[in-house]
Image (cartoon, rainbow, N blue to C red; front, top):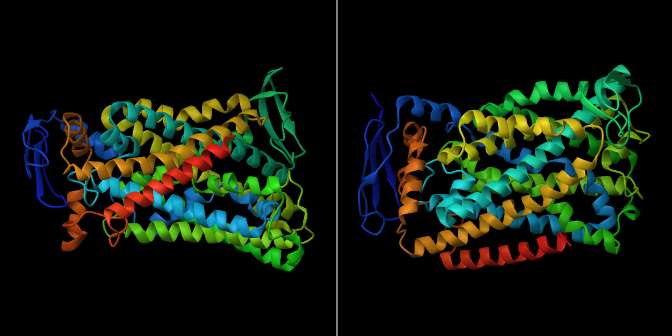
Length: 517
């Protein structure tokens, strides 16, 4: 027998009651005539498929601390190690303004996209599971959906490929630091077991002209990280909390070292040179590529989590960390070479000790390794919703494929550079432009009294089927929350929000064009 589901949703004006059974072929909808005015078939859902959905997607169990940790973990990445150099080369004034501007723009993009999710009929308080690409499909149709799949997959997977390479190389270097040796299986020009005893300051300790099947660092990272990618997002929250705690511990130790080394205002100009100022926005924007992860988080956040406070708080706290590291690092170490980063500077400092050196090796692993499974899970979620791929195929593409791609490139930095470029290009569009365009389209949809096309009705059917456990959580909502649609800015008129979103997408579009020149 199929399992009966009884879902009641509240729209901006009239109640929307959707009753469907997993052994039924009909979906009954009672709603204002401006929304849906007919009864249309719902594909039968077996108990087996219902259980697969429950196991393939996370539940609404992510609380406030887990939410903040997840968002901060997605913001604080490898770009942090170059912030101090950016303050020196670009000057502190424009760099701080750049961080403030991108923080505001990324937060607007995220909150407006969340409001677009709530604008879908039956989803005013995120009762339905709406992933990034399905949100695009609802507002822009099938071609928009395919384009969104391309952008989010390349953006997240390219970042994962680069992160895996860096983590493996850092782990090999840490083996040399701790055990005086690391080894691996060479594939070309000879198939042999090779070991290295000297760490490289640039990339892998192994000869960049040789190709490796694997290294010990790669295997250790794989064993530690890849199982997390097969879990759901809510299952990874404890890892995110631990990673963020470690990140704050390490960065706090850096600030103490900076102060001990000494601060000198002459080390950091108010305005930098031309090339340094030109790189500000690109380097800053790289640190806020987290917006594509927001829909998956909202789908699995507890109804009691305050969306606005969580997004604003996470962005503000991350920005504070960026600015503090940049300011104190630039004031402490003057005239840093353009090829250096704060990790190499700390290692060569007279104040360097065993603890600081261990932190230098751990830091890239903490900020990168914790985000790899998150991005894999989000890719899998987007591939599975709407039945684009079965779970096994989605797991292979999202979780396994990046680890296979990096195998021929572990000893060089060519693919790393390509991945960084592609992630910057695709991430900037996926994280900033697409969310704001979705919001502008959602405003048009609401102005049309949310009258849905046949395609949108079919999409709504899919979203209803993917609903996991809202019924078990809806009692946590207050009466007011349950009967009102989420708004990014409740005290701001819709037209004002539209103008703000238009200004934001125009500004970001110009910035992205300038960055790609």
